[in-house]
Length: 113
Length: 113
Image 1 (cartoon, rainbow over the protein chains, first blue to last red):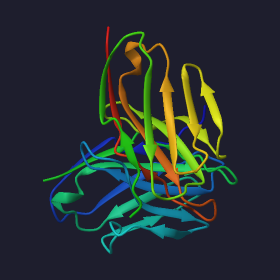
Image 2 (image 1 turned 30 degrees about the horizontal axis):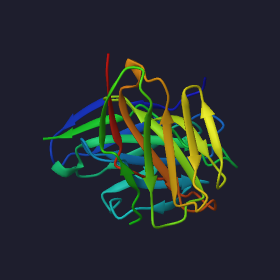
Image 3 (image 1 turned 180 degrees about the vertical axis):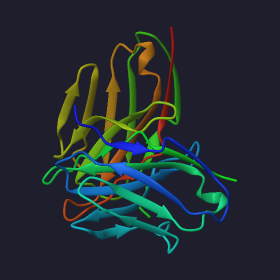
Image 4 (image 1 turned 90 degrees about the vertical axis):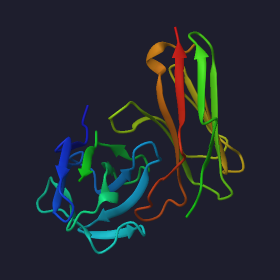
């Protein structure tokens, strides 16, 4: 069964460093999302992406965040200058046209020291 | 932002018992989804509901989309140890565009063998 994949599974970085989280959505999906989950809390929306542009973004998704679809398969989330409070699980999700069901990847656990 | 009130927050049950959890909101949702999350993993879709009043089953799981479109419940019958995890409801406010999911805070289920 097709699935969303994410790399790396874990990332440890120093405060102020840039990180890039990578996702490969399900191959025929057209809508892409990033969510995050701080330890012990609920999943929160960051940004949605369709047709090579951002569709919606939350107030969490400030100028330090950016997304890109550099080729036909990858979807990346970049944090330019990480802060301690960026430590969380980051989930990528994708969905097909016409169906509202979003499928989630296994997540990247980001720890900012 | 929009809030989904999910209850109960946690449950401890004996193996073989039935479980019920629900989500409510003051807003009308067009789609309700139920996910299960194991520790350190991404949310896995259990059931998707698209129409008010819809009742859908997936094995021992049954979920319903409330008539008012402001609530949904998930039932698990005859629980087994592998049902342990956190169950999240997620709703979508509208079906147009790249609408993000709003998540509840989760119900942590523990099953005692």
